[in-house]
Amino acid sequence: MKFEFSYDGKKLVSEVFKRTINSLGMEVKSINEGTIELKGDIDSESSEKLADELAPFGISVNCGESKDLLGQIKSLIKKYVHDESYRDVALSSLLSKGLGFSYSYLSNHFTSKTFTTIENFYILIRIEKVKDLLLHEEKTLSDIAYSLNFSSVPHLSGQFKKVTGLTITQYLKFRNNTINTTN
Figure 1 (spheres, rainbow, N blue to C red):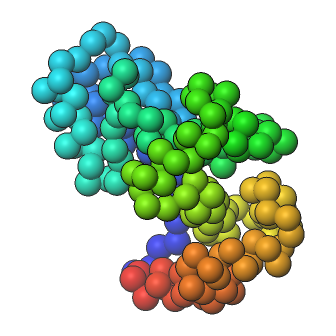
Figure 2 (cartoon, rainbow, N blue to C red):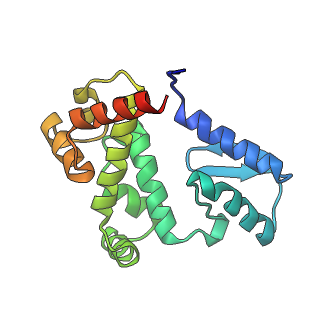
Figure 3 (cartoon, rainbow, N blue to C red):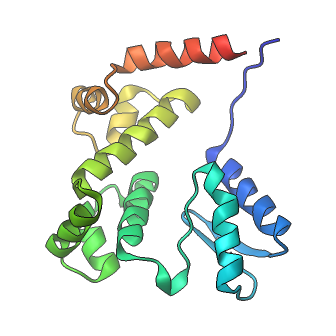
């Protein structure tokens, strides 16, 4: 039997968090993109348990003050990509103002920890967002390129091929074939 489905990624992630946190006897106060606030404080053992429970879903947890600079940089880049209200703000400016360090310091720190550049990570996150938009929303390539700060559709297409090794058309055919053969 074959089923077709669609899902709201934010709602799905939110539900995974809620269920996992509740199963550990904790309560969620609020969930916003990239952050969760719990009711009350938890000890380091509970924090580690939460991180272990979320890891199989590809979710890593950084807690409060111990959240490292690298995690903060990655989190801000993801927020920048997923929130269109930042469209007219330069990424370097957002990172510098948001984290209180010069962009060159942040860039050097990021590269020393990840062996890639902030720009390459930013491109990777945008391409992941492109994949999501291609599969789950009715947007044109022009709309996607504009919303994710690509200068043009050919620029988007070139970056997509560079990151994935596939053209957008090849990717869509591959995904459709994969979905059809698994059901």
